Length: 139
Image (cartoon, rainbow, N blue to C red; front, side):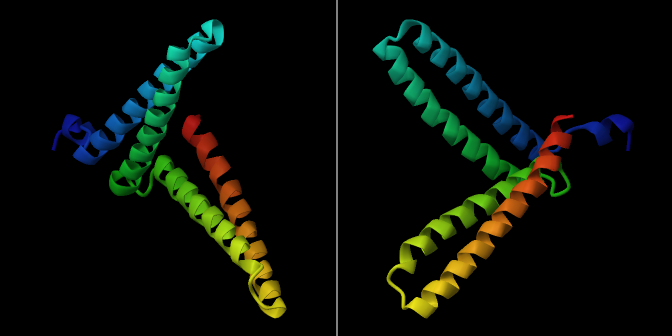
């Protein structure tokens, strides 16, 4: 196998890269429209900005999904997305648990509050673990 063949991107790499490029393009468009809205304040620009914000969020979700589905598990971006997904799921779980604590008997409330506190500790740990990965991915 030639050196050129080993350097060629795989289909999975191409999918992830294309989703990243789409997300970056949406972010650039959004930044441009938001800047023009701040300068001119036109309603049409506000509506366009709102629409692009939604598209950008959807593009980010599509990119995240592509990384988790097609990305290499050894890559920095994969690990960032995994930790980000863990944090998001845990934060939703914390909110759900906090909503249900009030309806429980006092002994169960204490136990659930302890579980929530422990889960919040995991979230902070996952965030700390993600920062060095993100920094080295940018470098």
